[in-house]
Image 1 (tube, rainbow, N blue to C red):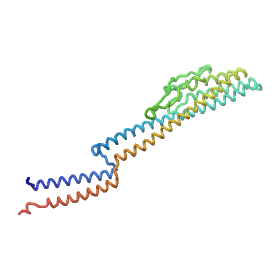
Image 2 (cartoon, rainbow, N blue to C red):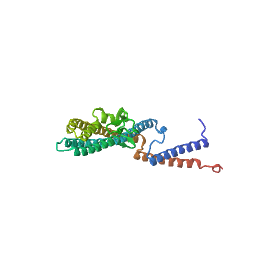
Image 3 (cartoon, helix red, strand yellow):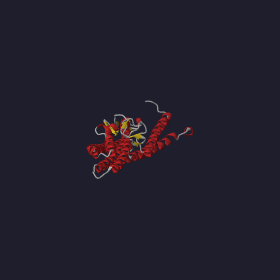
Image 4 (cartoon, one colour):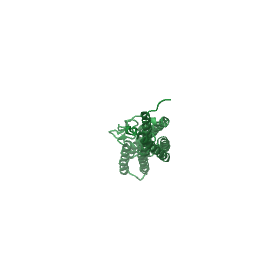
Length: 296
């Protein structure tokens, strides 16, 4: 049988009390912070799961940031195209008026000047910006996309042919803005239609104006289709936004489940630990009380 010395007893009592004190301090810290995990070693399994959920949560934040920018650009594009549709309607009404046989050269000349103003407004909308970037320049967002030629009979596109896209969820990309070639000149030359009608008005040629009405109708329908496509794209991005926000809520709950304390359970454990510590301190006081004088 090994000999138990007073030094061993003292060391064991102090060690046990120190362990109990550490346990009380840890539980108090958990209650104060509301977190069960202060470091990964507190619970490696839960810690790893929480880290995985946090990585996913941060990824959701990046997607939402992309979505916010995408929606802002798309809504700016929608506003610009809405203005273009209004211009196309004004141009059609003006052109129909110019075909009226009761109009004379002076009135058609005035209409031509009005049509030229509509052309300028259309070019301005083609050069619309959002957050310092051109909406209809494709990926060349810092290059002004449209310039009216010096003679006023043409509009040059200086952007690129690419649509600017970003990731809005895993494996899912959305077009942030459009390239002007596709909107203005690919299927229907929006500017040419306005220029042709303006020139016919200036030449006091109602028959030529009437010949260009079909082009104006095509422009109006094309811009309407573009507006509808933008609305559908905006709705799709908004639905993705809602889904990601719901996923973030779920991830927050999963992170909380792994990291946060159960208050009732932790309070109960703290009370037990405090009772154990108090008992240990009382036992220690009895063990450590004897001195050399007690043996004299």
